[in-house]
Each structure stands twice: as structure tokens, then as C-alpha cells.
Image (cartoon, rainbow, N blue to C red; front, side):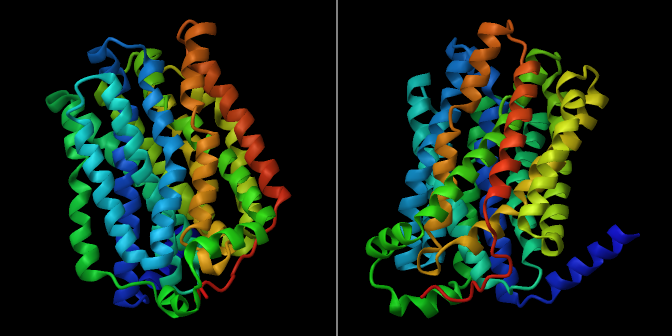
Length: 417
């Protein structure tokens, strides 16, 4: 009953947003969801790509590494565009860019070319989160920011859910190349942004006092160097946490549990629903207990889920374990958009949180490759112990780093001057 009342309260709050605020949030949510959809298509198709190019799984997973490693470049590039020319045009350019590179990936003639295209895709992917989050939180009201933080971040999970659904239903008909063609559809979102979304009022208010993006960014990073380093380390822990429990999990289900594409897709849908619910629940709860406490509790509660998640053999138990694991993993993640934007300097909010996020991604970018190589060399291709140890270590790291920092819950995000 309490959950139902809370849901009604949140829906009522969403309806109280102005039309401009609703359109902005929907656009930013969809931009992040479709960005994630394009990324996770790869994780479901690793085995098929490896088979076509006659390569090991770890060699194909280099594409995941390159995507993650190049994301800081995109965060800086598109963040700088957003801080100088506005959040809205930066977001539109970014969505077109990642859609084009996704489509090009479908026609890669070799693994080498495919890796190059995924690196370029990583640049575009790296720009979306920071620009979209800044546009959303500078437009939305401060009230119930934790709920909107959780909902926005779970756009990532919705993207994973869409990728799982596509893999379960159409992969057997169109193959991995057809999946990447489908991944080009987000380009049409630009039409919605162009016609329905306004520029951030905070950016419009603050642009007159901006001296220059490069000078302001450098000054603010030096001035808030401790905060910037902390956020980058925090995001390293978080990206190791999410990618360490997601990226090779479909491969684990295929290789070690012998599940068909349909079963893998259905299991992924189940744990994506868990992730979506976890992000909203913990993001909302952070308004009451604080950002740090919500993150730490979610991370610690994921540890008891490891045996069920990594060592079950039957599909129903795997689905249950993965549902609970991703509920906690994305529960912690649901707090992050609000937490990072609240801790970032106003004048460079389009660049600062996104750059810290993607630098953390860079530090964690070889996670899936390392997991695959350890499994191949030390466990005869068994991913279960590698997944288990990864989840244990990174969950503990997330909790320790988070509790070591500070928070600024409720900070004013209405100005960028």
C-alpha cells in the first residue's frame, strides 16, 4: 500500500511539471535510454560477432573497452559545446553523432574497422549524459529531485531493456548487423528536441556572465580539484560496479549456462525491470536519508545477492538473482545524476560532472576485457567466479568511496553564472 501511495504521489508530482519541463525531461530520458540501447546491443552480440570474425570473445570485448575509454573525449567536447552554445544544440548534435556511428558499425567489413567505429561511437556516447543531465536538472524544480534523478539514470536501464527485448525477438531474424541498423533509430529523437524542447533557463540566465568555457573550466577544475578528483574516483567505482555486473553477463548465460538467445533476452528483461525499480526507489529515498546513505545501503545489500546471481543454474533462479542484484546496483546508480550535479560548479555544469563521470569510465574501461581474459586463462571459460569476485570487490569500493565524500543535497541549480 505504501509503495502504491508513493507511486501516486510521484505521478502527481510529474503531472505538476509545466509542459516545457515535461518535454525536456522526456527528451533527456529518451536520449540517455537510446544511447544505452546502442551501447548494449554490442554486449548481447559479442558471441555472434566473435563467430563471424573468427575471434575470441576477449578480442571482441576490446570494442567495449574502446567505447568506454573514448567517452571522456566526448564528455569534454560536447560539454564545452553545451557550456558555450547551449545544452539543447549540443544534445541534438550528440544524438545524431552516436546514431551515425551505430549505423556504420553494422557495415564493418572486419573486426579492426569495427573497433575503430566503436571508438568513435564512444566519443558521441560520452557527451550525452553530462549534457542531458545538466539540461534536465537546470529545467526541473528542486522539489523531489531525487525521484527525477533515479528516473533519469534508469534511462540507461531502459536502454538495456530495449536491447534485451530486441535480442530476444528479432536477433534470430536479422543477426548482429541488423541489430546495429535498428540502433540508428534514435536519430529521429532530434526532431522532437528541435520542436518541443526549450533551452535551459539556467544556461540562458548565466551565459552573459561567462568569460569563456576553456578558462572557466580550467579555473573551476583547479578551484574544485579535490571535488573533481573525488567524483572521478567515485565514478570509477560506479562504472566498475555496473559494467562489472552487466557487460559479460549475457555471454556468461550463453557460454556457461547454455541459454538460447530468447532465454538470455527474457532473463535480461527481468533484471532490467529490477534495475529500473531499484533506481527509482533509491533515488527517491535519497531525498529522505541523503545521497550518500542511500548509495551505501544499496551497494552493501548487493553483496548477499552474489551466490544466487552468479552460481544458480536454472533460468528462474538466475532471473531472481539477477533481478535482486540489478535492483541494488542501479539503486545506487539512481542517486548519481542529482549527486554529481549538486556537487558541480555552476558555470561549467555542462562539462564538470560529465567529464568526471567519463574519466571514471576510462579508469574502468578494461573491466570486461580483464574479466573475459581471467575466465579464459584461469577458469577454463567459466565466468561465474570472475563475476562473483568482481561484484564483491566493486560493491565494497562503491560504499567506501561514497562514505568518504560529502554531499550537497538540495543545492540550487537554477543558475550557471
